[in-house]
Length: 245
View 1: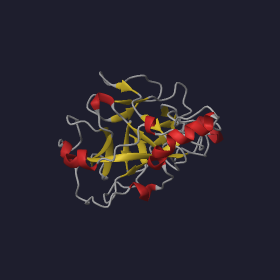
View 2: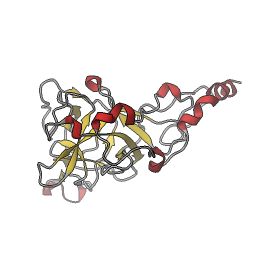
View 3: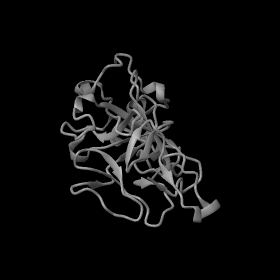
View 4: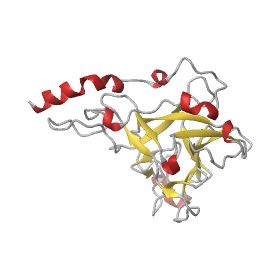
């Protein structure tokens, strides 16, 4: 009786959590030149976990007859890509490099020669739990700086800029969805945004919390593009890297 009741109560909500692929997050009414100043109109607010009524069957324990909630903690490691239809960041992966996260430019990793054949691949940026998947003793912790930038600690160090908030990513996955989601509300953020950064000589987009007073590379938060973070289960070696640099 209990599973039947849950399904009846959930029926009007399941349409919000239908299976999808990256293209299903595209909105046809957006233009390539949409910027941060149209965020409130553009940004597709992710389904709040309370709007989903059954457990995901991907990367989670099998549903039980009494469980009618979405997955809000990842049970597997995952990678993340941006969804912003009609923009240069659409479907780019979130990569680690320079102690921060960015779209484009590839992953920055390192493994000492003394580790030899035990070195993980280090060719992808993989998230695990609330942090990043590394082998280095002590790990590397992810955080958000007061200026909004998403970063991670140096190996063998716990240092974060004063006022930073450890973690900060929120994860959820609705029933039967192919992709999960990450977002953030740190410092009152309305999700995530990508800000142009040419400081390394290559055009990339630094990942920030979407806050109006963010301290961004160009100096103008209007240059930034809000995006949805879509997650995919990672099935490669764990840890994924010795350390990210």
